[in-house]
Image 1 (cartoon, one colour):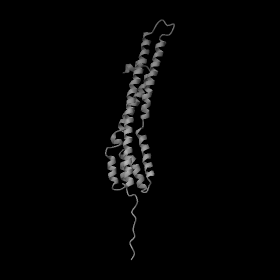
Image 2 (image 1 turned 45 degrees about the horizontal axis):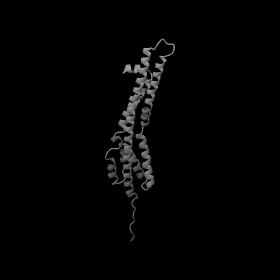
Image 3 (image 1 turned 120 degrees about the horizontal axis):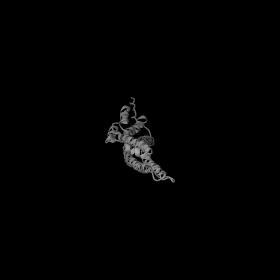
Amino acid sequence: MLSIIQAAGWPIWPLLLCSVAALALVVERSMALRRRQVAPAGLVDEVLQVLRQGVPSGDVLGKLAANSVMGMLLATGIRTMAQDPRCSETLLRDSFEAAGRSAAHKLERYLNALATIASAAPLLGLLGTVIGMIEIFGSQAPGSSGANPAQLAHGISVALYNTAFGLMVAIPSLMCHRFFRGRVNDYLHDMEQGAERVVHQLLRMDRHPPERHQGSKR
């Protein structure tokens, strides 16, 4: 590997940095986008079961928000109902939508950076190819006694190694970006469906405090 890097010349160093950054982003997103970290199975059903007994306390909502990204989304909407039991349906849905936008931003973090690496790596490889071709033609300068085999071989290696390495970085980065994008879309769909179920349950609840009746006077 060291001999390949030395043969490819200085244009391969930006590609090496891109490969390290892409690997770090893939590992980070793989850990952050796990099912239990985002939308655990059965969480919505547990929340609905708790809501059938009434609006939960602040401690319960805090634990729900710390559970996962979906838990944070549901806790935000339920907290709106807990603070104002007579809030309108529009206000309740706006609260869920705002929390959903925040959740989407959290899930999509670093995906643009991964897409940028996937797009830039072939261009950096092409840059190395152009530099290698320049060295090749430079070795064939007019007035020289003949072709310099060493310089010619070095130019060809720079051109080919950088092109290959650029594709080796770009293809896995693009595949991982598409995979993570699809997973995020699936999570957002699940959170949207779960939030809709919780909204319907909250709207069906008795949100008006019971009236106190006075006894009849004799």
